Image (tube, rainbow over all chains, first blue to last red; front, side, top):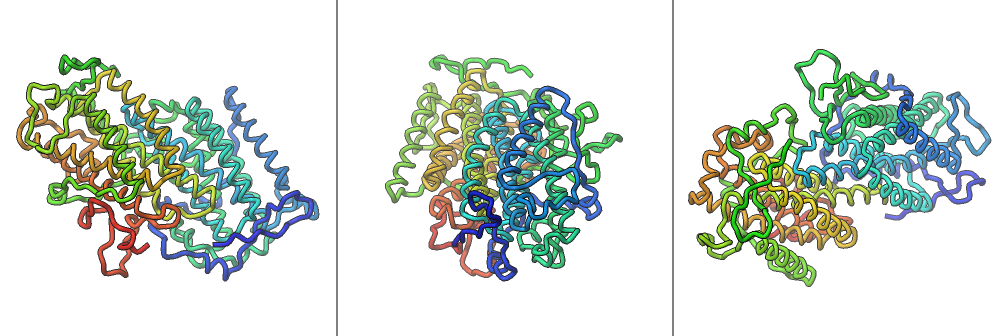
Length: 314
Length: 314
């Protein structure tokens, strides 16, 4: 497998961070149908209406540690945006046409591939640490690992779907490689000592992910990214999201990915509200004996800013 | 939750490594039925005949690295056996009655709890590393993670079952805690650089696990461990192994646990024969188009010493 070095997207970039959008023929050629197994974590069904109803939501930081988590994400996001030529605007209709902040299909692919390669780390690192903890202290995990592994798998499926559509430049790949090394080590050690804070950080990260995908969906729906029209969805995506089929568009796919990020936002903000050592994971087990709404793994009871501990039966 | 310090089992032990066997009443009290969810990785069905047919098997080391792996396990095993007062004998009927090598119910529980707390590490560490690798190099994992996570979960279920039956002393718990720290670090770094060697080490470790459980089953069947007669199987075990019910005995449980270790022996010896970077996991996907036997996740095609790469469709 060769990795062609992408063309430069815009002259102001000091290094080439472009991603080549594959043509339909190339997508078909790269589409390895032979090795596809059943999904390790089958995706729950999200209806089309539920996916469209997802919106940008923000949990107001309450504690000092919330504020720290929020600011960490803001600083990281702003630096990343500046370097990659992206501007988050309150006015979603703004296109920054002709400036270095104009978003092309190529830049969107670089962005989402980079972000998903990072987003797959926290769930797996947290699951690893909780697994070791359960073995070491001889106690049940109370089903947190399940949801964390599912999150990690889900983010990796996003990534594996995107790389069937775009091919990042060598420089982007090097950046991804190095960023993982730095991020994983920091996250891993932070999670050993402050798991709640880490879940809050991921909660705020997912808020940004929902905002970014909302922007992408707006541009797709307003025909600002013509290369993504009539794009064939990779087989891996059709196997993972049961609702997607040969007629599904790239917008349908991104709607589902945004819904996934919204779910992770809810889960992580909730986990950050819990006692990580003793509380059970309320997303893994539906309790039938209570009348008040409780979390589940779907979107029908979605609370974007997380569930408060006092509202949960733990 | 209190952790009573166990009574000394035999006077020659320098520290107390005993495990208190819980009485039926205590088992019932500790049996938390409320938090049991569906198993994260549902256990495949092993028939009773398949479980009984499992036997001690040994893969002859072929390469230098095989020999290294084999010797590492032999040294670790012999040291552990010496310290805990266990002697592996070719004559399974030998009881070492009256010596420090006589196995009591208490010593068996210490042994299996300690071993399962270690056995849960490799699968999870390997899955974590392969997950990060897939994210970092933007490539599919080809389903190895699935089987590795299943293995880690399975070993943790063994542990969680055993701690519903026996309560290790504080000193044993400290030993478990420290051993994990040492073993996990060594295994993790070894897996980064020599994954095949690591799978071979686990293959040989599982050979020993099968031998140990075979010994335990022999003693159970020959009524040498009366405290384990009429023991109620914990709920967590009945939920995990669908074949177990209220009538199942401790021997039925151990037969299943030995079968699991035999499966891990097969999987890890096979993984050690594969190209870890490019080959797919042959246990995760059944190919229908071939006539020759291929691996699956059951015991009906079991090969205790692993599958040779040339016999597999990859």
